[in-house]
Amino acid sequence: MISLLLILIGALLAAPIQSAPALTAHSSGCPVSLPVPDYPVGGPNASNAWYANADRTIWAFFWGWDFVLRGPDQPDPKTGYEPGQKVLWYKPASPLIVTGRRTDGAAPPLVYTSRDPRPQGTMQASRIYFPTTGCWDVDAKAGSSELRFVVLVKSSK
Image (cartoon, rainbow, N blue to C red; front, side, top):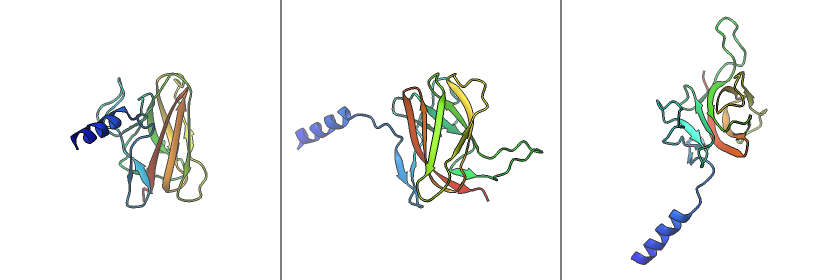
């Protein structure tokens, strides 16, 4: 019995690390990704709300989210509001490409924008706009690195 347990432990230790963040079933049925209990070197460590790939080459932090909240669709010139949520990335020094699709229904793809003058740098601020509520699969690529995670987008109303 003990030798079988040791074999199982050895197999688990030798297993490759998964490339996607851990998932948990939300009451909605959306398999949301869990943030990692860590933060990027040189990045803000005030919160453990980072998503990261297995080799920790791409990190994403959503300012002010516990679950993603979908805000108004129209910009407000008086307040400077722009549709979408702010996202901070730590990544390889390559252009970041972010795409996403809703997995539990029909919707246009998410919209990713960055006005950051440092798109080739390792830190990049951006905005992601989800056109509808629902379960969203997000895919970020920079160079040969990739981060995939799932978020549940709820209405802010």
